[in-house]
Length: 378
Image (cartoon, rainbow, N blue to C red; front, side, top):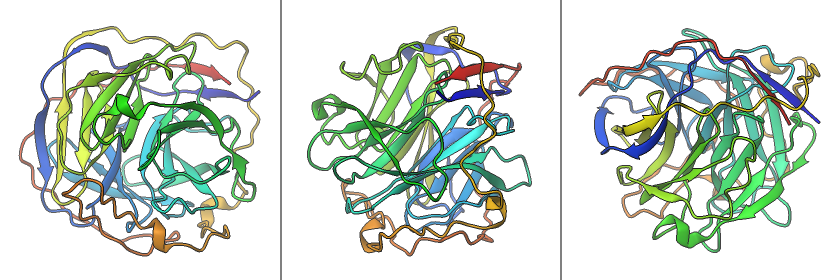
């Protein structure tokens, strides 16, 4: 059993019980390098900062921005590779990783359902002016057959990682990632957890993003035409999969693929294409956040992140045998407004991009206070 230890320096966001109305905070008007925002998370160590990324056709960078629509800086994910990043999630770092907060990057896009394996890159949340250093990696294969996927979540209490697939035909499927990172040289097997009913998720049922709340009591997903929420049990992360989620009133934004809980308990979404829209769904009423239950046993520091000792100095160039790269460019033709760009994926090159985004509005941030020590076990 792998136990995980997290030392995330933030106060847990409250839990929404009643939603308000979505409001456009700003648009990122002058940032052509960020044209396919596909995942978003808020920075645990830098109040007011968010991270997003491009999907297929982009490079292995995290883009920091604020709610006024200003691009703050670009963080190279040093040591990772890029094929089709589709979502990111914040969560407890794997055991043996000395970082206050980790970001899990789902390199899991596969429009042609042809990849022999997919990758999850785990980076330490970057401070201002720093690269996002790779600290762990999974290389994974699906049982039976490949799937397209655009949603990754990390359970805040157990640290286990889940993938929610995007099925153009058939029902969405939930898979769980092995507890221990595999590293780049071993291919692990994803575990089938549940099959969801497509009818639960609106007209198209195509899951494009997801996020788990910091207390483990809420999980949100989005498709191109809406958002949904499960009430989840922090002590039983899989108990909700056989019940339909409830609708949440996110903005329907054309090609919207990202969703994240907000520090105030609400939800924030962004869109693909330039200009990127930044939309906030606030709480009308909320209660105190749930608290993760104490672990069943003391965390064990294995000192093994599943990485070679020289990973930080060399990028993985995607050495798996799958050469069908044509089908991995993310055309995302499902919504009628999509015009996602195609391009050859980068394999670890550092992009020297820079951009400034015009501010159209700004909001006050909830102060991110307190030091929360959470101990998580598998």
